[in-house]
Amino acid sequence: MTVIDVFAHILPPKFLAQMNAVQPNILDNFPYMKNDLLMDVAKHRASLPADHQQILSAVNLNPEDFVDSEQAVALCQSANDELAATVRANRDIFPAGVAMLPMNNVPAALKLIDEQVAGSDALVGVQLFTQALGQPITAPVYEPIFAKLAAIGAPIWLHPVFDTRKPDNNLTFSWEYELTQAMYGIVAAKYFRKYPGLKVIVHHAGAMVPYFSQRIKYIQGPADYADFQKFYVDTAILGNPKALELAADFFGSDHVLFGTDSPFGIPPVGPTAVIEAAVSAMAITDQQRQGILHDNWRMLMA
Image (cartoon, rainbow, N blue to C red):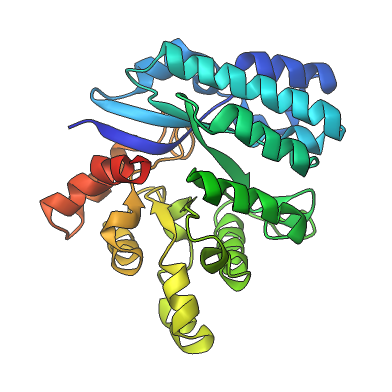
């Protein structure tokens, strides 16, 4: 059985060169991105265990944070074309990729979805972040993106970023809070009811939601509780089989997908081995385990 990692990252090198032209030595602001496995496909391939594949998404070097709306569109289009070409040239390990969007130009983002995602043989969804341009991802200006993706049946990969208004951000806990708040915002906006075809894959096993599910039930009520259970989640919490069991109990094992956040988390090649061992140690059936490692992705794409 091939293990499919739904949340792995790269930094397309031509796109990086374009961003360096905008701001020289741009990665000095993001030292964790100075990782050869992000940019060198040969090294990336060599780092993977046998019988493993990855769904690729770009790291959070987002053009809208650096350039105007027209430049952002061009940069996203170019990056998506580069990612699609990487997928097509490496189908044996990269069966699909995830597009980026220019969040400072929503009309162009919708057009990009039509042109680069809908019907694509390489890009099967888009990555959104918990905030964009200082606004929650559920700000009304971004709602058309959710509607469009639901209409074409393409998933959203939801990745955390820091809320830069806060002075005490930290990598251990802040991202989990931001993911949880974004999930709350999606449920509060009733997107799952307004857009029944909506599919959202949340990084980090759904963050705080499984642990606090009873607070959701008794404070927000059964309708919101049911909407929270509509999220898909990955396994990228660096191990901890009991926490993964809690996620599977809440979201349903069929909504849990193997994901690692590679190559980040555990140097030098990422946490794949640690997370796979945790999935192996989960107190679930072999069929459920096979679903997490492989079958659930296939069903999501069916």
